[in-house]
Amino acid sequence: MNAVTSADPYASRSTVRRTGLRPFFTVVAAVMGTVLSAVEGRAQGKAKPAYQYDSGDIRVSVPTADEPRVKAFGAGSINLAVKYLEDGAVSWVREKSCVNCHTTGTYLAERPAWTKQFGEPSAEVHADFVGSVPKEIVQVKETEEGGHRHYPDTFYCVWRSLGLAEWDKHRNAGTTEPTDRSLRDLFEHQSANGSFVSHGEVEIPHITTDFELTLQAARAITAAPGWLAGLKDEALLARVVKLKGWLRVASPKNDFDRVLKLQLAHYLPELVSRPERDTALALLASLQHADGGWSTRDFSPVDDWHFEMSPAVLNLIKNLPDAAKPESDAYMTALATVLLRQSNVPVADARIQRGLAWLRREQRESGRWWMHSLYRGNYHYITYIATAQALKAFDLCGELPAVSKD
Image (cartoon, rainbow, N blue to C red; front, side):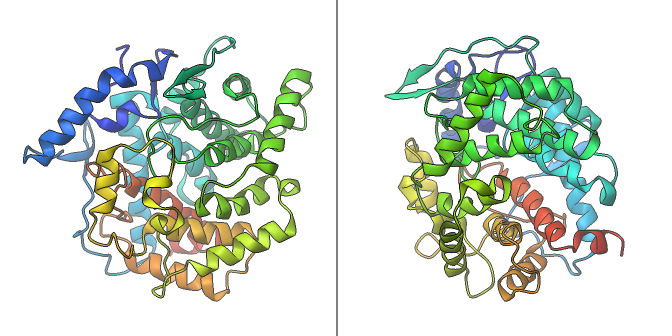
């Protein structure tokens, strides 16, 4: 098929099929009416989706807040979390055949790092990414929508390149040809100021700000083994310089951007000064809750995550039961722990230990870490992102190998 599947709202965001369809965002407006109608229909009492992921013998239920917490956190529950990630990514590839930020992109960005603990990551997912890389690199035309200039398919190109780079980092001795081609294509989507523009309706947390998306691009080029060091193309080198220059001086959109400076310092330490790191660490610590967790919604005013937030998304967030005082959530608790470890904060630090304790308490019987979606609130794909980030937190704290081999 040559069109984005519109039955699932998420299939119309940060998603491109393997057919090579490049003017992706031109179809978003066409499908959005169908998407909104479907959402409104559910709000009026029509049937909600039965499964989050559904393909062949894979049946993964839609996450819910009332799923029981695990009775015992350990090897068994961790292995269930890994199975959840595997099933979700394979199902998405088979049914959607596309790269996105909330499932396959997250999977390939993180899963290859755990090959020693959990075995080979999915070759099927990797092959789908490889098949989505354009055969030839062509110049991409910048476009304008709603007064915002951007390049089509930028989300997709960033996440595809990041996944392929991480695969090569953990599975190959060097950067493979498809990954190199993907990275070269990625830079055809770079804006003139050096950034990668996060155009379109916000999906918290992976489509929020230009800084976040540009940071993911920086991670991709630093993950690809030997790619930066061996780069000889003068035009590409100039684009890399622009990327670094923008990240060095970009004004933060919100506190989320401010703490992401810590991740930038991890990937490209020369771009972040010691005072900037100290300020970001202090900010991150100040937002930890009494229960040991963090809340994603503490890091930005509800209506200021991005330049384009629909009334449906705003109303969803504003009407959550804890809207006035957001509770800790799995994604931000895991990400905060990751940021602390990437900043060389010792595992024994009380902030990290309290965060890990929160994550141990909050894993659900399915292996997932539940979180209410802050975009549409139907399939709760943020649960998938949170689960991957939780495993990364335990890995960076040296607990994933011990847990998985109990």
